[in-house]
Length: 100
Image (cartoon, one colour):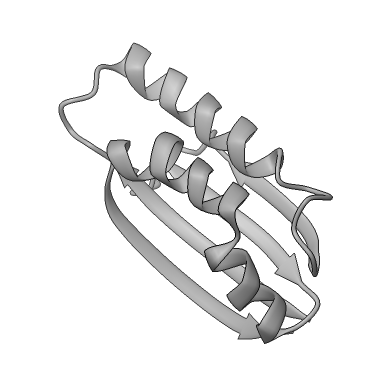
């Protein structure tokens, strides 16, 4: 199994209300991919964090293997969510992929 973890920081110019809407959009969009991407085992987006955190959103996903992760990266439904709900609103992205 391969784990794919991403942490995002949202853009500073977003208001708190806008950030809440963006977080909900990211969560709904990415979690909505469950059952649609070959090899995607599990997908969860965490939008609530403690004050000690320095990231706004976390993606925690699991794939059958590295090839499944590569397929996810270019899958049209994933790309559509990333291009509409994630990339326009994030300023930083940190990712770690590993075999579990």
